[in-house]
Each structure stands twice: as C-alpha cells, then as structure tokens.
Amino acid sequence: MVDKGFDAGNLDRAGVGQAVSIEQLVALRGALSAVAVERPVRDYLRKIVSATRASPRVRLGAGPRAAVHLLLASKALAVLMGRAFVTPDDVRRLVGPVLRHRLLLSPDAEIDGATPHEVLEEILQSVEVPR
Image (cartoon, rainbow, N blue to C red):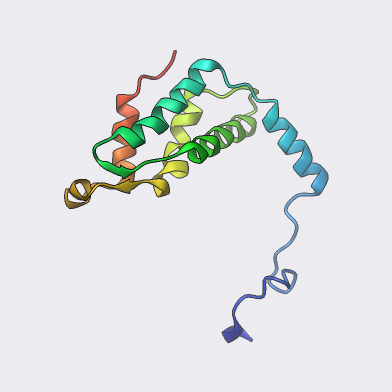
C-alpha cells in the first residue's frame, strides 16, 4: 500500500537493484587508494577547509571529516577522469557539493542574503591555487 511508505526491507519491489558487485566495489576502493595527492594539493585542500572556519561570514565552518570527504571525492573524480593523481581543479570542482551543506553562515551574512555557495566562491578566490 502506498500510504504505508517505502519498505526498505523489500528493495526488489521498489525496483532498486544492485549497482555494483562486491568485487567491483573492492576494485574501486583499491583504485582510490592508488590515487596520488601531492603535498601542494593537500595543503590547498586544507587551506580551503580552514578558511571556512576563519571566515567572518561563517558561524560554523567545515571540520576535519569534511576535509577527508573532500579528499576522497577529489580522488574519486580523478579516477573517473582516468587519472592517477588529484589536481587543484578537482578540489575546486568539488568544494561546493562537499562543503556547501556543512556551513552555517553568520547572522550578518544571512541578513545580507549571502548563500553558502557565494561564501565558498569568495573563499576559493582568497586561497592561492598551487602550480
């Protein structure tokens, strides 16, 4: 019955199938662990995350777990792009999707009508990109 909600115990009935096999998942995780992240790119990522906590427009910024997730997402993007290394552009591309929901803006920023996306763009403009 529709009014009973979604039955997570019966995924077949909902039309949800297996996306990858366990073997494929293990191989994908192995591919992520093989992706290189050079020191300047790690420092760049760290500076971006730290800047979310230092910004006067942010009341609560991204923490260490957010940095780990940004790193893992950047590695995954590199794999999807066919590379064995992360670039600063990978990090920049994923800052919004990974960090946007983790920011709590300051009251002044909210009154000004700022959005987390705009604040992250300001932060990206303020952090020097490694060459």
